Amino acid sequence: MKPMTSAFSPLDRPARAAFWLVLLVSVWHLLLAGQLNLSVDEAHYALYGLKPDWSYFDHPPMVGWLNALMVPFTHSDFGLRILPATLFALANWVLYKLAKRLFPSFSWIGFWTLALVNSAIMFQLLSISMLPDTPLMLAGLMLLWHLLNLREAPLNSGDSLKNWLWIGFWLGVAALSKYTAITLVLSLLLVMLVEKRFYWLKDKGLWLAVALTALMISPVLYWNATHDWISFLYQLNHGQHHDQWDWLRAVNTQLAQLGVYSLALFVIGLWLMVSSWFHAHRENARLLAAFALPIILLFALNSGYEMSLPHWTQLAWLFISPAVVYWLWRRWQYKTARVFVYVSSAITLAGSLALNSQLAIPWMPFPANENPVRELHGWPQAVAMAKSFQNDQQPPLFAANWSQASRIAWYAYPQPVYVTDNRFDQFDLWYGNPPASSEGLLLVPSYEDRPPETARPGHFQHCQPLAVMPALHGDITIVTYHLYLCQGFQPVQYSGWAAQLPLVQATE
Image (cartoon, one colour):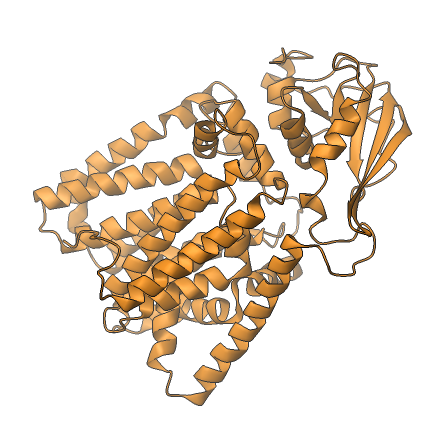
């Protein structure tokens, strides 16, 4: 068994280089963190932290529990990004150790694996964001580490039992983080089948690991059992917005991943996920493919019904990244391989430079309200403007959809925020349905439909403009917020368990 020893020795140049790379990237992103408002997902899961529960409508509770550790100390945009930055740095360290362990013949593989990952636009965007994927990445990599230990441990030994329990623990953490952790179970089964390790089924450690995972996910099962299994039903129907599978949506999903994960990682990564199964000498690459491919296939197949978001597959690209670096290193003597890497690196670094500079200072001359960073600016000021029109929290605040409600509810906390749509979601669980014929203040950013939709269930009868507030950087209008005074709300009539919710739940 190979324990995780100290990060690096004084003479370990690749480890020192990797350490400084991760440190510099983390510091830079934390410097940006204080200048940008929370994204939609960050705000939504920050609200989880303010409202701890056994589980939630759209995700298991881990992201809420982690945010609950921070919100007693800080509600600042910067403060809420410290923990995810730490978790991502830990994931980098585990990935570094995995790369060195799987491909020891290349001493710099750990460093270049981290360089490949941290240069990708998607990992830069999410390295300081507390999303369900944040603990999932660390849990998935740790599970793989202990699987490697298990493969080397004698059957039915103390080491074998210990590693089975660690596998069960990290699988539980993954399952508490995101429902797509089911792919890790598929990966473990795939490894057992391909490597013909059927003797695992006779190992008591495996069944103790299963019991541990089941115990850890019991809060999710309990919460769903008391809420008509709405999370599972939502996830089963999520991504099925269209009746017919469309190859164009699937292709666009892959192109989006190509753009945010880099040409080298995407192209070589996909090639290795497929080709490694046909080459006996690529045992370690095949192991990584066994963990990456189920994730890629899940979202590739589902994207024909609805485009998958690029960050949903980030764990897959982490898994396969060491194999990509090793494959390119073995072919570095070929000019085509070097040119391919240079082109991929130039494109990725140019994109990263443009992204980071625009996040730091929105300097690019985009038309007013068309700035690509518009969703990260102006929310606290816009919410303060809306609250200035209230008297003792009346009329209440509304948003056009759950994504806008997340930002408004976070920056207006502890006020309730209601959503004008006919979709049941977490906000219905938190705040219920406003009374019929009530009025409200509807805050709408310039990139949403205006004027707001009216005269249908879940919406108001009519709305009138009340105020406008642009968010400026110098002479550049990044985004404009529109406030409407609306009357005559028409509640949605939900069926089943949801119909038992009170019209207006108590506010905190």
